[in-house]
Image: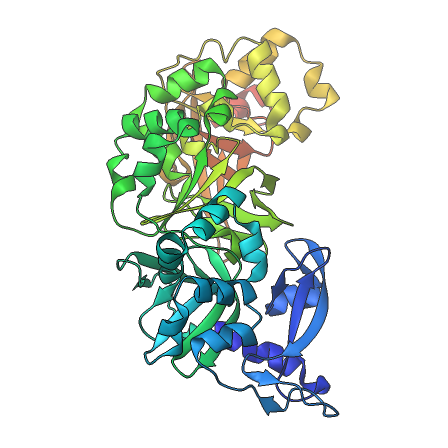
Length: 491
């Protein structure tokens, strides 16, 4: 995919000469991308305006007086190639750590070389510690950026695990559909610079050895003690320590503290709800922040979707900036810390399923005492009319009569959309029965209850279900025969 995206950028840059690649650079930053068609035509990356740059494609160089990049770049050993791609800091560190002799000699190496900016981003104390012990700490750190075989981007398959040259500690590769390739969530910003004894890929950050699982991280992180309690109570904590390819959006303690105490107490008392809650924060794939260039929808382990996007340097979840810390790399995935708890419908109680489009129904059910009468451990189904149903005429109805009408919109048991069938009788909390009618044509299937049909938007919660209705329902109060008899015009 990386190769295909690079080829596309080469095609876009054809008018400027041979072997020129078109890139996008996010304005106000040094970040450059071989971009996708979508980002290219939008002229933006992560919602930020991007300018177009034309540079020599990897392996080519300019010649004075000639258009484009007609010359093949000289091929040197890995050490010399670091200089060719301007990874000067990595080259200097290779020299002072005694790695130079090794990467100038025979062999076949892959070097994921941090850019100069990547070294500048490294914590000052960490960098000083490396520089003060060049023959051991720095040498080992550089060896962790290397593999003892030649791997071009076409060989870096998604989910690939590569043994590094530092005690064979593993490097974790992800190759995304938009062409981005990461190693331990560091993005390859200049790939496939071929050397006589290997290949060099420039990456945008210094990477460190990975030894912990997701479980290990949440068990020791002081900001994730509540999440650890949730995982333990749900019975899923051990799963987080097993091999896999996961992304966990991990709510911090402060995120859980935003929930009402009664909600938190209810969650902790229901193992099934806790499992749904935790699984809604997990993806069955590794999504590093650098792999996200625009909004994408992913299915969670709970079964429902969330949208992961970006806004400049920030990751977003369902369009909201809530990611506090990105890319905590583990042996079985990646963790992003978030400051809000993502609440799936399956973890909500039935009244919590109501949205602003049904706010009038929600308010009336509360004001008329119907929600207070609903038992916490019982199951219900809400047949919720949309706000537009509550006209001035409806709101003028005597409240005692309106209460009777709304009682017809609350069923005694949890009945999901898939459980409704033609001819079914549904009992309300007032003891009345409603009839279900299902109408099918070649292009349409309508589900109606008495005189009102359902609209799209049914949901299922932990103790109930919600269906949206077009109108107020009026249960039948007598038979057809009685109506005709009372009319007086039928004999």
